[in-house]
Image (cartoon, rainbow, N blue to C red; front, side):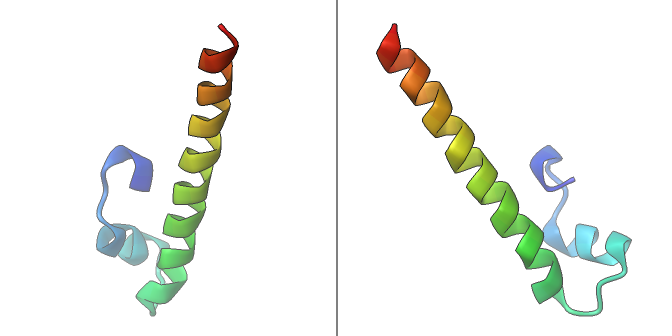
Length: 48
């Protein structure tokens, strides 16, 4: 949901989190995944 543009507040509500900090954990995971994937793509572009 976060990667598709839903706000963190909406995701928090949908998941039933009483504290938005719980939902922010997912936001951090999404951010780390994007950084890792961009690194892989960058490595492939350099190899070309």
